[in-house]
Length: 224
Length: 256
Ligand SMILES: Nc1ncnc2c1ncn2[C@@H]1O[C@H](COP(=O)(O)OP(=O)(O)OP(=O)(O)O)[C@@H](O)[C@H]1O
Ligand SMILES: [Mg+2]
Image: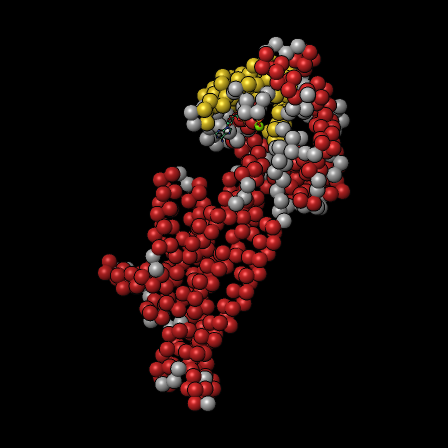
């Protein structure tokens, strides 16, 4: 009973709820912005990686390697605490947006590459033979076929990035986790943290299920 | 179309395809050696030869799916050079039919036939669909227009692929072994479609081992071996008395 009083204090939960909601708003904004930006840049990066002239391809490969290896937290701290030394001062939201989408772009590029390379060469040839210019064949023929393979890992990566928005609390962005921590300190009770954890779960669990479903469906498609 | 030969084009003797001294290497391996071919509009060429002799490489050079290293290639009066800008425009007028059909699996048969006319040729959607239905009727699969490729038999898919090409109203049609991935009972329907096209005066370059087809429609048979053209002859002469020993051996092999 005392345990519930401590970790799941209904009164404190109700009182901290509006604050958590404000944090959740920031978390969702950061998450959605990072996912959109990261995915879009990732697709561009992938096309550069596959089709640009060789030297530019190498740059893309370098970028992808580095940002897949670098921990997001390290990148975030670099952006937030190191860049000011060269006069670039970004607020915590923008810093986190950069860090998350730069890393997501690198992962997305690899996922898209696998998807595009999974489309048989004959499809590229058929499109070319019908006189389609490169971008048109990408848009009308190749990407619509690649997307089926791309979607599950893309969603999976997006979930990961969404979870990593919590890192933004390290650079004092008032996201869900930070708000919960502050409220915990204020009210001297861990319930807000539990509340935050539950909110993360409720938000992401359906997405996790969807990925599972999509992967299963793809496997069934290929089994034919 | 009123003319008996709706595809017949005459450009005062300008050839549809003209290859002069074409060479091609894959790494150190020379796949095409000094190829000279001149195809007139309305002419039907059958390319044959043993496996690995360079037939696919040659026909794919015509629309630059493979680029040549040296020599001169002129298609529809335009010289093609590797990396050229207007390649897409030249390809619009050169249809190609592949061994494995290469239909777009995410589009219906009708959409397969309209996607390029609409987006490349800027034909209005309704008109493109009417045109597609016209060609689908001609290859006798109009009733499958709204199905997806995987719902059709191989023969039907190949006929759909032919009509997809025709919807671009090409001046030249290239066929790379269009029947060799088909079950025997479906070969006939595809060949009949091609014969119909030949009867209408379409300029055709066909890689095939169907010698009956060659006999029936070819103006010239070209025999290739080891990346070279070894013999060029009208089908009667080629089948009756091939001059090259390699051609004789090849004919013996595929006739039995
Ligand atoms: N992309 C490639 N890279 C390297 N070598 C190739 C490539 N494509 C073809 N070749 C080689 O070039 C030669 C000619 O190949 P090609 O496909 O033109 O022959 P083909 O006459 O069409 O044979 P088939 O009847 O088997 O289709 C073959 O020896 C083949 O191994
Ligand atoms: Mg071949």
